[in-house]
Amino acid sequence: MPKTNPLVKICGLTSEEQALQVAKLGANAIGIISVKESPRYVSAEIKKKIFKTLENFYPKIERVSVVQNCPIDLIIKNFLGKPTETIIQLHGDEDIDYCKNIREKIPNIGLWKAFRIKTEKDLNKIKPFEDFVDAILLDSWNKETYGGSGKKINSNYLKNLQFSKPWWLAGGISIEWIDEILADFKPDGLDISSSIELSPGLKDIKKTEDLFKFLKRY
Image (tube, rainbow, N blue to C red):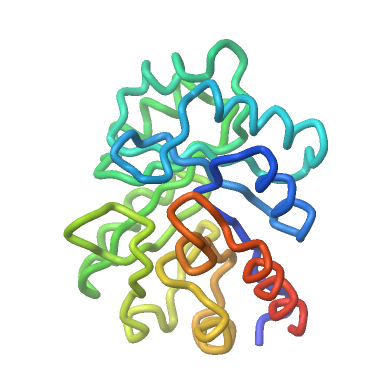
């Protein structure tokens, strides 16, 4: 067992009310999807409002803006002045040059990079990125979508992973899988979305509360 519980990010929030409810339950990070193709998409205006509210009431929670293959200048434009996010999460096919450029243009915001894992060989592509990001997020590969599919990564790929940066596990994380995750994989963080939803972008607060209670047992 790890000495401390992994951090928890609840992703795909779409309202101030639910963001505050999830924050109160103990989330370490809250993610908002800035990808128009996603059913959980939130406009720049609403995102700013949600993050501003979180900043006021729960300033220690990481406020994560999830983007996918987005021009860096557009990310900056969507700050609508002063950024309210603390993390930019790259969830597309962004390469190392993109990571370097965003570091230069937006140096004061953390940078996480997600990798979709289809085969074990996909893990070998991660190492070159480690010098240019603050955290790594492993998600399952899905032909239909870049994230939020609820599909799990093959457990065999997750054992004995070592990165120089903190790493988060995403993809179908539920209470039923947490025992194995904490015992065998020991990620630094869990990124949870579809397994606690009533519908895309609408969280089941009771199920979310049960998840946090379950984690506290450790």
